[in-house]
Length: 535
Image (cartoon, rainbow, N blue to C red; front, top):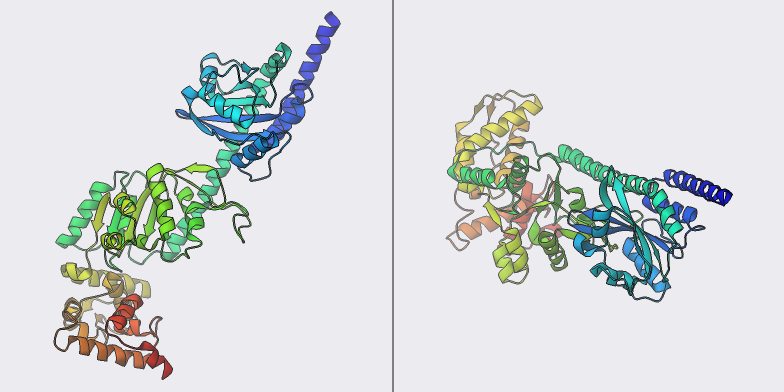
């Protein structure tokens, strides 16, 4: 009898050693679970291992490994559950996230001892048990997952059959429970570190792009009353987590406002992730915002995390929000409401903590009335509206801005410019600046390039005579205004051979954004193709 006991102890010690070796030789959770199955299967009968992780007041099924089904690299937990349930002809009914009070982890939290269920149909104690039955689970042993005495979750060894687990099986699992807990805890930590590393790499790429692409001016310059109102709004909303909607014409500096809000917020230590909704094809914007799984679509050769995932803990800036498709408006509404999303081609729900700042040059209220933008999304975005005034609304700031840009460009180009020609400054103050600050910046850069003295002046024709005063805001039906504008634009189109954009295009010659010129051409009923055909 004594020899038999010593043999059992030796066998148990040998098994514990084998489990320790197997578990410590892997870092990824799926590999750890597979090694546990290989080590323990000859001694204890079970069909699968489930790992539950506590997240505050909730419990989430983090991973699952089924001996008869297996798990492919990158495959979601939900997919494995579906295939496992199908293997025993049970329709899947996922119960992936439960309150602690509705989960058997609540029992482990108080006892810190294994929980044994030999017949789930007759021993149902928790609301979660009904979901396990739907998976085909009929019996299981649950071990507390501990780290330095703190309960992190549970490791369940489950069977698709009713089983009376022997005392020696339970004791053996208790003996290896500490090793299992350490192995699973390390694997979870490895997964978290890898996810954080991927997020950090994505943030670094975005920050590098931002350094390269950042506009020459990094500060909001001016002292006009309309601008001071904007700065007051920034100071009030920045310390909060409220969603901000920035509106204003093209070129008014809406992105600068977003940067200022982020820099003054508690999230300033994390990245400000920028997305131009108008610059992305409609078929790619979902992948860009939410990421995709490997094989989700043609060309998806590997898993990719999206901008919302990258911005976790920080801020995401959605520029040109009015350009989103109806489908993407629904997806964005869910993120704003539920703080969760799924990657394209994936089923795993990802929870995100992101502050949203959106911007548009459109009248979203009119878009809502026209049925082009969802009313519920507009109200979610319009929590704290900030309107950025156009340059003609803050004409008092033009001298300050002119001086600021001349100084910056001259320093960068190694030129010394100490004065501004009075006529030039007067002309710039009279001009309506349809392209706003962006147009002003481009005009001054061009002037500094051409400057060959210490006095800054614009070349004749830099600012079109027809647009120097109030012609931009005058009604198209005013005497002479429409005809003058049309004649001037046609003359420039003839000169540029119908080219609109580019450094030699008509928009550059007229000193306005190409989109503004295109709109003007349509309103004046100019046939731009006529000039191309004559080129």
